[in-house]
Image 1 (cartoon, rainbow, N blue to C red):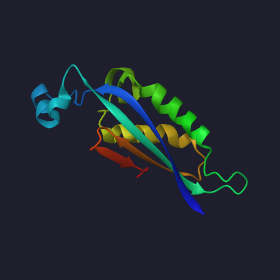
Image 2 (image 1 turned 180 degrees about the horizontal axis):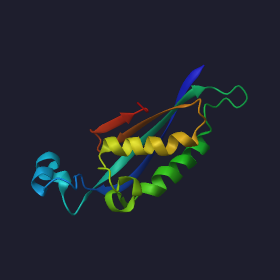
Image 3 (image 1 turned 135 degrees about the vertical axis):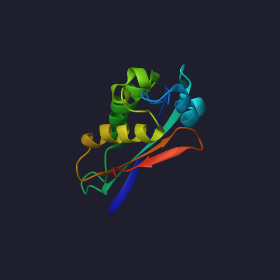
Length: 136
């Protein structure tokens, strides 16, 4: 049987959406308020979903404690209360949009899982705006 299990997490982080190679005016036109040079923050809500066969011995797809620890070390410790543009190496040259953040989170978590498990990241930047990424 194939089952999907999910764990919710959250982190608070600041960012600025802009491209270094564009003028302030062009950045302002494309990114609007999100181009604030003093940054702005979000209370991100994260749902990490893992899909796979139920293990016959344990009854788990993945031990939720293991998943919790992976999310804590790879996401919460790395992103929470950080300025994504300035303090998180993955965004030094990558615009920290919700789309890019979800891909980075996926790329940090996926190698920590058994290869037979599928991963899907759902990242809420606001209660109404969210991104879903599953590796393709």
